[in-house]
Length: 312
Image (cartoon, rainbow, N blue to C red; front, top):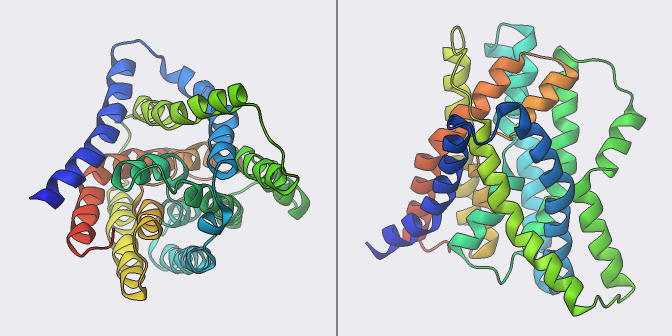
């Protein structure tokens, strides 16, 4: 019962914030067309500040865990490869193959990672999330572009792809923190206080906007693909990855980081990327909506199971 209460108290506030975003949009307090603009501000301002602050104020000997980073990289690559095999074998429509690959392997780690870790473990080791984000973002973005371009994409040269990854706001925020640490830059207390307040606001705002992003329409003809995406993203992938991680001895913040990575729903910006590069954008959006809704059940289940097993 104690483990159950820990998981409920940790995850319920996250989904209450998401629900508040949806209700605010339903009530007309925020328009659907405003969500991408607000989301861009959070992604380009608040999230880089979060990455910078968590890493800058941390002990790198704690933040950098080679074993964890290797597991993340290998896990993403294997998940991507298996997603490609599934899409080629079982998805008949070519314009949906890249969308399904992206929906299966690419999680909403950036938005969900910090709030999940904070609620389950605490704020002491959030720098581990920041370092993991610096590894995850280039892999997710690069592989997603490759998947979409293979089947329905517009031509993008390798140079543009690499520059796009290097200019990613989260990568820039993390790089700035590493540089500041390297040159031993000491920021004034008022600046650190402001950065701390902005970093705390980022997760709340992004979860709120995730709720405002929800749309419930256009599911016709997508039943098979949506079912496969939800089962793969929320049950099969986290089930396999977290079981392996548990047997390999990952515990505490390391395990929670992996649970946030592999157990999170499909990435929100997978919808906008599909619109920009090519593919069935309606399916991409519905995968985000359904996995985000169902993760309230699946993520609670994974959290409770591994809490009982003593993983964190």
